[in-house]
Image (cartoon, rainbow, N blue to C red; front, side, top):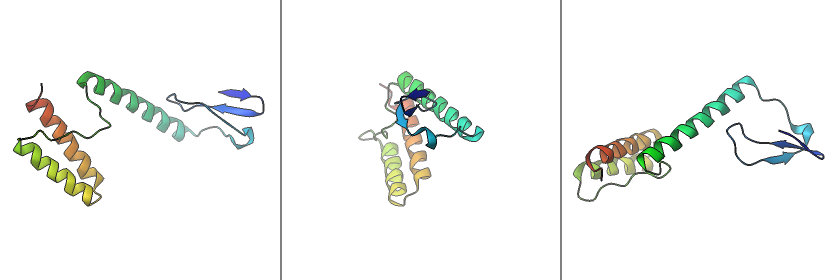
Length: 107
């Protein structure tokens, strides 16, 4: 972003808090780093848009609906995946549980 006295002033590509550092420790980002940061910023904006449209907090896992056998099954699968440190399967269970809630348990 610039300089503030003897410090370089930096900010993430997608926005966020500024920080100051020694200008001798700063280098230009590589093309791959700039592209990666841009994709992360776009994904963050898209998640926020979806979360607002669905009125949900996508940073929190969905909760199983009490009394629903399918939700309970997905919740058990998610717990087993978490216990096995299988983050991909845990995410899959979260996605399926959220889809089920949106399709079958929408208010």
